[in-house]
Length: 243
Picture (cartoon, rainbow, N blue to C red):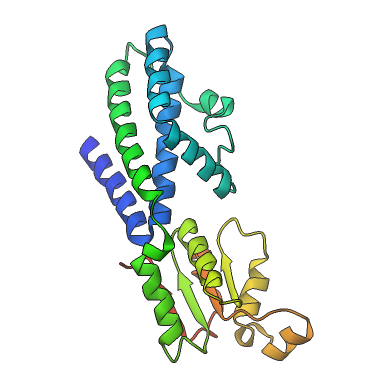
């Protein structure tokens, strides 16, 4: 049974890595925080605290980087802001009973996991969009394909971080008529859909222009727009998660 759980976790991380390094990095950082919270919660003796303080000193750069990343992403419930581990997070973490669990062994294994995550995060923080071959392929396709160059394009990703990453880099490449939507987007989904697909949603390009609304040519979305919606103005659809 434990092996099946490990396999599920592995598949989840691989799916994020296939989607984008940004999604994978975010998952690594979230797991890093959860594991560090677990150790903070269970480091009760003076010896345990000294070991934890020593580990944190040795990995101060990674901890600072994760804290900065969480503050920058800063829009979901796992955001830790400037304090990587808050009192609320410690309070919410269940304390394991020594009589039921081998807590010392679990802590030892958790340190090993944190060491591995630290190595991954160190590698990922040096990775830039310019090194991202998959992103470059998408930008080249949008720029050179005669259909994508002039017509509506819908880009799907399962992961919020990937969708935002794509939107940011499409705008950085000079595309101004790009919009992005996910479960946390504050814009009304109906308005987003109408700006992208006015014809199939009872409007038109001229009506949008009269109302002073910019028409969207490229829409990047998670599965919040995956079912029962009129997006037929799109000429092409790209599932970015496919490697």
